[in-house]
Image 1: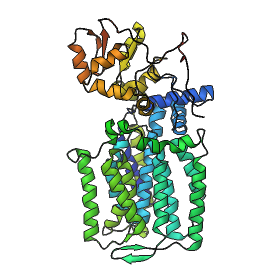
Image 2 (image 1 turned 120 degrees about the vertical axis):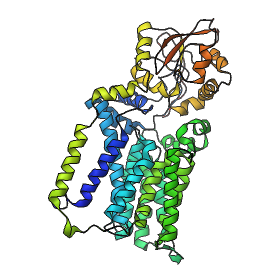
Image 3 (image 1 turned 180 degrees about the vertical axis):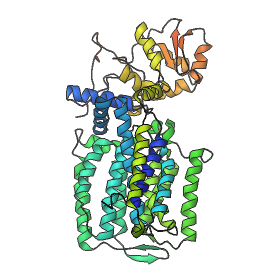
Image 4 (image 1 turned 45 degrees about the vertical axis):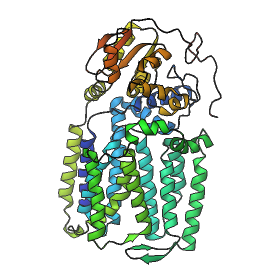
Length: 504
């Protein structure tokens, strides 16, 4: 019982509250809506979607739901508590990850009881990881990564650990999110770092014993085999490589795939991390284990190259940063006051419950980001013809639109394969905007009022504004609609006239 109310656990509860506060009261990730719709279809039909049924531009095209398992988790949370359930699951996942970071820092610190250094680094990681805050399937990937690292940390420290957990983690991971490939790279780097032994200045390596190496290689082989335990076979395993080498338009145009801009607040946080690593390496007597050095280099490269991977950088670099703070006062269990820690933990829990966002607050945060009122207008007026919608709103229209077919949503892969994403980018960047609208026989446009395309249509005599609020505007074509062949021919029942071969 004393361990339950120890000072490190009390500090961890404070960290959990900070995570809760930084996350804010919102479920504004644009992907969550089509994730929920995918899971709803799976739960109600007992079949995974293998064709696109959401849009009229790619209707009937083969599509692989590569994050189906994490989608089901969010959907079950929604079924239980609505938006509150989705938000609660997101917060729980986030706090598991950040508390995992805190625990790894605490256990691997040069000061074995460096609570304060671990806490300060974990708080810093909250700001570094904020790029991924939201009800995202990626959070499941980082949970699996934390578990992988905890098992490997124990194996390196003690020479034994429950390695059987790792293949199970990869089986869950490949069905949850494509970031499993990062986990495999991390696993491979840790194994490789123990293939040599030596000292090179302040870098050292300890060779695995023959028994340990056999165990790790067997676990690696079982983990690779576990990747193929999925409903899509090798297609799902290949998907991260498809994203890296085929989906160039997605990587070049989606904000979270951009490099860090050091002029922004986020860039300055990254700069603090880089300066911290540099000063720690120069001023401390810290000796770098070869595997840890490799992971630090991977973290810096990935986080600086793609904003999306700043959360990964936080996970991998945190124990190193905590080690540089070993000069801070150590935690002494003999001086611990369990009753005071219990009061702190109870107070944090009470504050968290009191300030947990209500359903109304969550709905308001959604209405501030998505065209909730404009969609009600569309439903009321039953507007005929094709609609051109904002990329970030497509998933919301899929989930809330009661069968409404969209132009595009944030499933960028299928739209890049079909060329629709390139047309969308051309339209919003004023490159043949009107030509694209004519090509798809667009009769209505649903877009934010401050966008360049909205300004163009406001000043074009062939379009008029029929609805507007602070979130969205609806434009109607008043000129003749070009008589071109529909992009995706459909039957009278709304089904595609022909279907290409699906993922088996």
